[in-house]
Structure formats: structure tokens, C-alpha cells
Length: 285
View 1 (cartoon, helix red, strand yellow):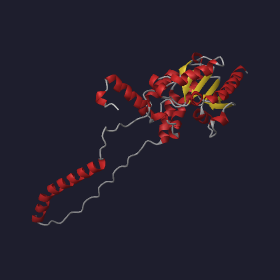
View 2 (cartoon, helix red, strand yellow):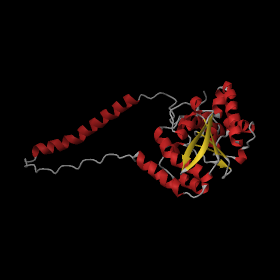
View 3 (spheres, one colour):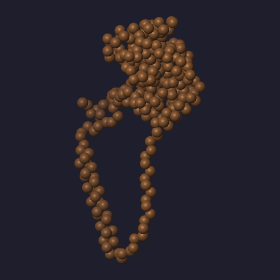
View 4 (cartoon, rainbow, N blue to C red):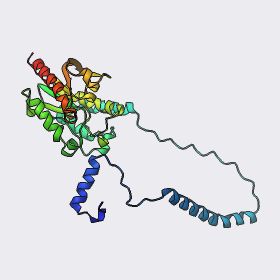
């Protein structure tokens, strides 16, 4: 393996981007360091220094006359570190989302929102893209590394697969509104936690309310369970029409497999094609 000093700046930049896309958050030294021994040596040196400084004080104390010690006031207890409650972060998200009167305003509100820890590790906000008043709205789970780099939902291989899925039933990306349940990429593409999903819920529901789509196409296990509020798997939820209520309005929703599922398991394309045909029939009905 080449040392970092041997790399050209462009090679080093590519390497760091690779580490970031892979979810690496810590870099190690080229040679192992015994931190335990290092800590023990520092503690021993600090103890010896304290003893040297304390010796003259102790000697002076022995020579000084004894004085009656006055009672001391009790020291105030240290204040504990208080984390922001989940309920407060959710309330702030609800307020920010409800205040937006358009998708542009909602995007601005989400860019200013700091209540979700995913924002700190993501490169950018991946917001909805496409027709602001669509007949069909497509909703996935979360941005991947390509989306986080490009700032657009469903980029790269997954985006190309989605384009082929849509084209097969006569739909084009430009005519739809495409987004994700969670707008910031989790580190290493891990699934969002329940807390993170709950904080992001007001934003995706507000997107649906502002776009007012006639139909929803929900992609993948996480998005289907989230929007249908179900613990069933995507194979139990796919292939059937359901209704979800957003801001007092019921929207027909249909779940199928995520493009990533078709990339990793091509045999699933047969199931996805059956779902897409059923989805197209529902649009015409």
C-alpha cells in the first residue's frame, strides 16, 4: 500500500471521497500506537510533578500554627448534560414543515433545520426533484452515496434502473416528482433509526401535501413500512393498492421493490414487473 505522502493531490482527494462514501469516519495511524502505555506514562509523570509541587506546601503547613478550620459551604452540584428530547426535535420539524407554503419554501426550511443528526454526516440535502404538481409521486427510502454526491434523488445505477422501470409502463422522470422518506444520507448507507425517521416524517408528509399527487409509487421495504405504518415486509406490502391520509386528504399508494433490490437480486425483476403492470392498470382506472 502506498503511503499518503506518495500520493498526488488528485489521488488523495479520490481516496478520501472513497472513504467518505464507504462510511469511514476515523483514520488510523500508519504504525500502531500503544495508547494504554502512553496514558500510563503520562499519568506517572503527572503524579511525580504533583508530588514535587506539593512538598514545599506540606513542609510550610507543618511549620505554620494550627488554625481552627471554618465550615465550608457545600459546592453546588454540577449541571448534567441535557440532550434535546426527541419530542422537541419532532415538534421543531413539524413547525418548520407546516410553515412552508411551497416546495421551495420547504426546501429552505429543511436546509436550515438542525434537529436531525444525519445532516451532520451527509454532504447535502437531497430534496424532491421533478414536476411540482405531478400525477404520480415516487418515494424511496433514503439517499445513497451517488445521491449524496450529486444532490439528486435516485442518481447513479439505482437511478438508471428506476428510469427503466418507469419507461416500461410509459412514465418519464420529468413528469413525476421523485423523493425519499429521509432527505439526508445515513453514514455507510445504514438504515435510518426510528428516531431519525420520526424526525423526518413531517418533511415527507409536507412534501406530499404540497405536491398533491393523485397516486404514490412507494419503493422498497423501509419506505413502505414507514408510509403504511406497518411492520410487514415489502413482500407482504407490495402489489396492492392502499390509501394513506396526508393533511386530511387520502392518497392511493402502491408499493413495489426498490431499484436496489433489482440490482442485487435480478431474479426480483419478475416480481417488480408484475407490480408495475398492476400500478399502470390502477392509473388508468
